[in-house]
Amino acid sequence: MNITYQIKRSRKRKKTISLQINHKSGSVVIAAPYFTPMDEINHFVQEKQNWINKTIQRHKEEAINNKAPEYKTSEKFYYLGQSYPLEVFFEPFDTAGVFFWNNCFYLNAQENRNLRKHYFSHGIRKKHGNIFVNVLIFSAGSLICIMETLR
Image 1 (cartoon, rainbow, N blue to C red):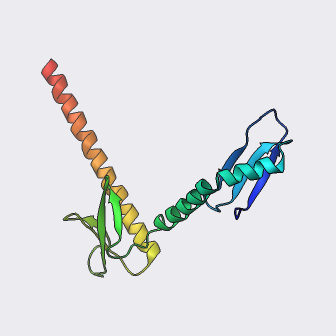
Image 2 (cartoon, rainbow, N blue to C red; image 1 turned 120 degrees about the vertical axis):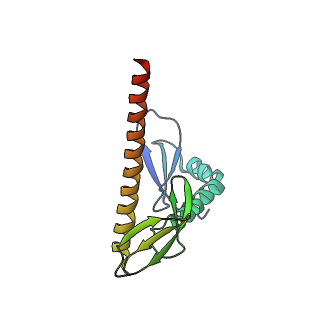
Image 3 (cartoon, helix red, strand yellow; image 1 turned 60 degrees about the vertical axis):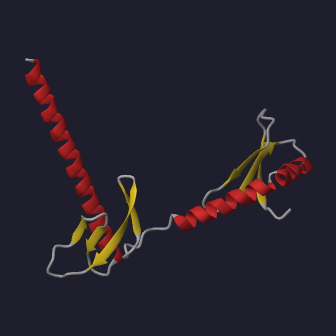
C-alpha cells in the first residue's frame, strides 16, 4: 500500500469510517471511531486505493487546467457561455482596453500581465453592465407599453 494518510480518531458514537482528500494538497485523511483496529482501517484504505489514486490524479489535472490566465494571444476566454480567442496588440495612439468583434476579443495593452488583466476584466464588466442596463431599459419600455395598452 503506497498511500500515506492521516488518521483522526473520534470518541463520538459514530460507527463509520470516512475518507477525505484535500483538493489542494492531495493529502488523505481517514476519520474513524476511537476503538477501530488499525487492521480494519488499513483494509478500508486498501479497498479504496484505486478510487483514491484516480481522485488525486483528477485533482492534479484540474489544477493544471485551471491555471491563471496570462492574457496572451490565442488564449481562450469564456464569455456568455462560449469560448472565444484573445488577440493582444499594442497601439500606443489607440485607446487601451478590450473590445469584442467577429467572435474574438481584441486587447490593446502593453506587455504587462497585471495591466492586461485590469483592462480585460474592466472591459468585460463594463460590457456586461451595458447589456444589463439595455435589458433593463428594454424591459422597462416593454412594461410601459403593456401598461399603456391595458389603459
